[in-house]
Every structure is written in structure tokens, then in C-alpha cells.
Image 1 (cartoon, rainbow, N blue to C red):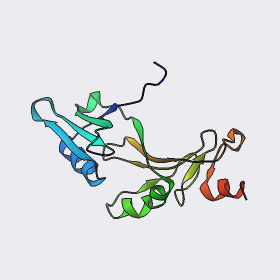
Image 2 (tube, rainbow, N blue to C red; image 1 turned 60 degrees about the horizontal axis):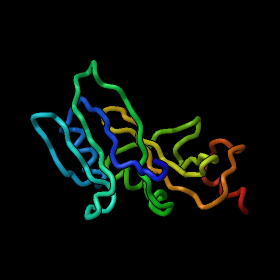
Image 3 (spheres, rainbow, N blue to C red; image 1 turned 45 degrees about the vertical axis):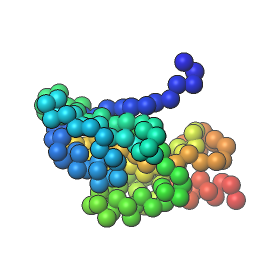
Length: 151
């Protein structure tokens, strides 16, 4: 279906309680916790609309596989990510050979991003779509370099 949207995604954890505490610290709303199945579900976005859902499943170490997903935010929100994560003791990750001193831009989209990890090492990202035209030939670069191309 051409106009389908992603509603939910799932990640695995070794410790459900640690993962729940982590995702709550990011401001996600715990929607449902099933102790007997060792799973927790979080709503993302406007809680009244329940637009997206994240499932966290506890597994044994030998079943654990790291994954990746991104939270979509505005550019203004993205600029506040370093401070927001620092207050929670969460470090930004360098990405694509670039340090985390500022967002990186994937010029083919274009989108600006910060990367970090949850306690299990799942790769997470805050991503802001940019209004400019895509420039795939630029690859991945820091936001300040991207902005210079439009001056």
C-alpha cells in the first residue's frame, strides 16, 4: 500500500526494567507492561493520538540482536538534544566518521541527526528532516557545513 505509515517497531533488551527506565527518561509514555511476556509498549508522539508505538522485548543474551531506529523531531528540538541527553547521563555517538559536536546531515534525504545508544547498545537517533533540496553528492557532513552550501 503506497500511503502506509510505520506504526510500530520493536527492539530487544537483556533487562526489561533497565530499558523501561531508559525510555521513560526520554519522555516516552509507558502504555502497557506485560510481566508474564517480559514486554513493554510505549506510545510516541501526541499521547492522545497514539500515532506510533515502540515495543521492548526482553530476551536471553544469546537471542539478543542490536537494532536501530530514529525518533523524528523538529530542527529546533534537534538542536537541544545534546543538553537533553546530557542531563540524563546519555552520551552522543560519533557517526559516519564525524564527531558528535553537532548534528550530521545525510544529504541525500536531507536530514540532520544525532546518534546515541540505549543500555543494550541499540542504535538510536534523533532525526530532523530539512527543508532544503537533497544534495546526495555531499554524502554525510556536519550541519554547519550543510548550511554553508545554502548561503
